[in-house]
Length: 229
Image (cartoon, rainbow, N blue to C red; front, top):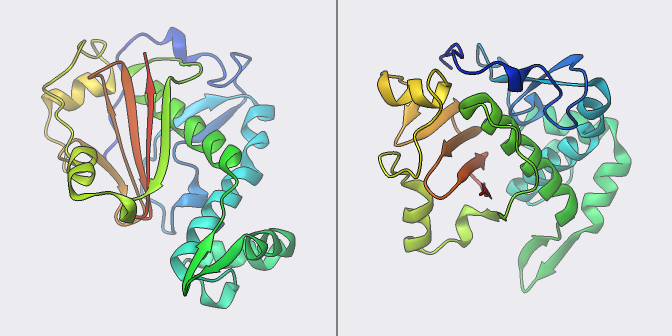
């Protein structure tokens, strides 16, 4: 993907995104467990401390594997399309067993129960990274959140989620921020307001229509929205 330099206020960037401590590592947003090799060049990166960076890894693997298993309809590694997910399930049989135990047959349809707290933790974490990267904002707890399969949306809901009108905003992005620059330059990785990190694997959008809103789509399956005032 095309990288854009940040010319906005740098003060927000010199601390851990999650706890405000001393930044010791670079955190990819999205984490690479949600992407396939070869990775796109110049992935979005923010600063994090070592403790926060490592604290999320098992939850990230859980969400990546859950999505892979849902799409395959099975937690069996040989049936998983994504090689990375299949490898994680082989190396972590306890995780494979946990996801297997969450699977039920609902009148012929395979359904996986989700661990909502883990999903929300990771989705909010990634959304905060996107908000910092795009609009230079360090954010706390959001006021609204959802994470749902695109297949559950009505036609009207899908249209509303997919079509993002960046011309309608409550406030312009910070001067020099990446979000402001994206309004002014042509970027072939941006489509209808969505920034495509890797085709069919991950895309996101950050807008300021009613506060700061981050939308994400994982593997063209899981649609997420996080909103801050």
